[in-house]
Image (cartoon, rainbow over the protein chains, first blue to last red):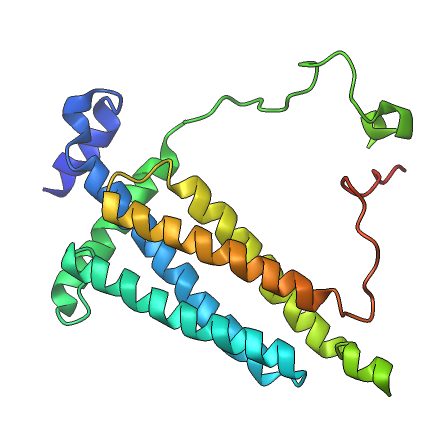
Length: 136
Length: 83
């Protein structure tokens, strides 16, 4: 099973036949990223609120905290419903964690981009040359 | 005294600075991620985050304008740092 999966990525990753489950796995990753961002937002906002005295700043942060908590609940519910997240079945969650870690490490090993991605010499001049932008 | 009431305290301003930058990054990411996501429901939720973040950023900017180090905002990025 493990070998199979590793092979399919090494084999030919542009062949659609080898991208079975790819959309699902990609969405799971994006959802996890989204969840972690929202969660971090809740914590950041709560921390900021405890450091703030001005009434209008406090009111704003409190509103945003409530909004973030509501969004966190929505994304959590979505992920549980789509079976991307298993807070009540840790064995299942363990398997997902290990699989996405392995797959992402494999993606990390791929050469996806050209070596030189500087856009130098694509333009014959820079718009901010008069203030020395070309020398920055 | 009146001035102190209108202005944010220094440490509060830095909290707003952090929250504002966090929100800005989240907005950028939620917007860009929508181009990669397959699942429609996930995409809709990200769009909701985009809408909420735009409003949140506007509100934060209004509060951040009361920071003691507030300054007029230029139209473009800061001038390049030359050696």
